[in-house]
Image 1 (tube, rainbow, N blue to C red):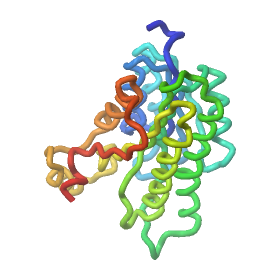
Image 2 (cartoon, one colour; image 1 turned 135 degrees about the vertical axis):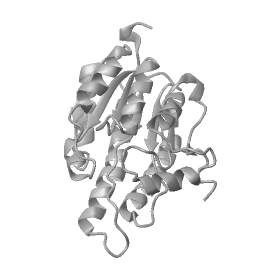
Image 3 (cartoon, one colour; image 1 turned 180 degrees about the vertical axis):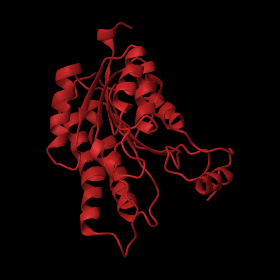
Image 4 (cartoon, rainbow, N blue to C red; image 1 turned 45 degrees about the vertical axis):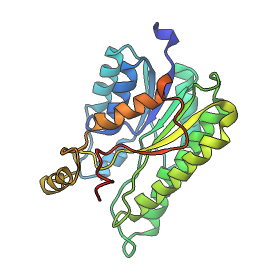
Length: 256
């Protein structure tokens, strides 16, 4: 496959080398995709793990080494105007987008009694509203052949003491199910993937041990586990899977 024939995937939420988004970029670049990606450093600055200063350069270089053209956009998805601007930017740089992979999120722990209205609104703005607007922009501009288009969103069943995150991810899943049917005339498949608890640097030793011991396959999930499923769903072989919320967690959910 020559470079100009590579389809374009837009992957959101690619902020850290340790994250699932970075693994998805690498897997898709390996499989013959050009990559548009978004990141938002201000989110990492608010989180315990902090900013990964070398992430953008390293992720870009790795994808380019796999033959991909790469275009990165720093994007605050809490703003309603951002999805349209992101698509305009990526399409201008790389061409029409064939696959939309939404790996971005707002995730700050809080419970029923201590969640603030501001936190609730931010979670829904990023996890639900931005995802809807990204899907809308994708659908408005999709020009690929029937059956080629892909929409994939990362979801989660975490909800207890993670209320706004879990609730907004529930809304995201409903969006994906709607897209699987409403975009039928475009021949676009839409699926959500729940990777389960994945070690991207947020687990302490005790939690990592607990999850490993409660996962039937006997290890913790790593970003590549989710990335390989996403890459399959984006491939021609994965095109028949549509309208699904898929658990890819080593059996952790089944054992709960």
